[in-house]
Length: 205
Image: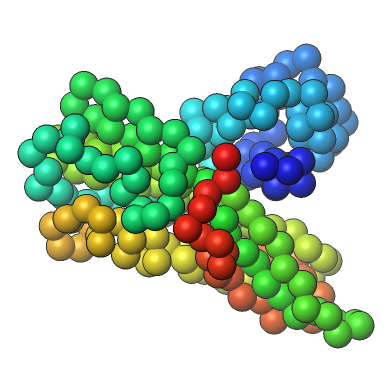
């Protein structure tokens, strides 16, 4: 994962948690701190922070019932061909962590131009005895001075559809909680589209 993608990933987290994780890192602004973290901290340490701390990001949370009797029978990936960055199997629980490539495409003026931005999208899926919890982090890129608002869960249905095709879930979500307001994109006279990467059968790592 290149430094630019790591910076975009860390910008999803409140600055107080980044400073608490790496107190020796100095910087006046959030961007200063993140640039220093990316240049000075090992990538595996950064990814472990992202996995362990993803709960402090703005998220959409879904709970589903499942009928899996033996969690040890779960496959290596529960989002079809997307590969998780990390899988943790505990007594009575299995947790998958993904960084799915998400692309924000926009057409801006002046001058007329087509642009795109890629983001590593943190997704955590945890299976317990009868419930699976899906945590989808809300990504919010900033690309210029004016704002266009789009729903934070724009690609959620595609992720949940992949989960359904890989693991049998009972009916619709039994509970849905959103901790995220609509995503605010800063754009300049632009049209913006959000899609999963054409290379979405891979993941960041």
